[in-house]
Image 1 (cartoon, rainbow, N blue to C red):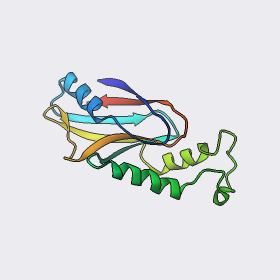
Image 2: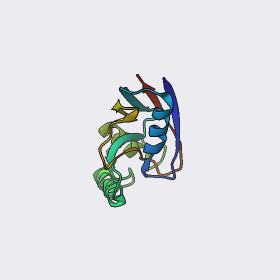
Image 3: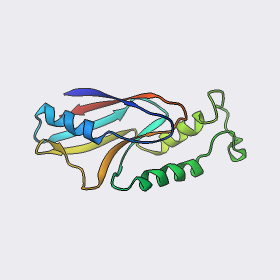
Image 4: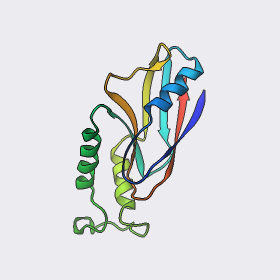
Length: 138
């Protein structure tokens, strides 16, 4: 069973799509199995992260912004791939550091997430995008 999730973004940040995933898994009728998610882009990532306090997402975004600043920052002067904008190569670096796929067990017809866990697309580009996440349920 496969599906593509389309996730619109409005620039850098974390976008939760847990409910969409839960609804799709429930509709498939699979009681026990494994859900695999894969983002089909090179400048964003997938994360399982706390979904109770939005400050967590803000702090994660701030941390990675400090860790990998835009290519216009003097500390990033060594970068050569800059013609797609100051956020592009840093987005590729962040995507290389974070997961682009996730595996989540399914039990009793639902992804086996912890109480405060949510599934997020982490957008690393400044401009809005429509991101595609492929799902496979077995």
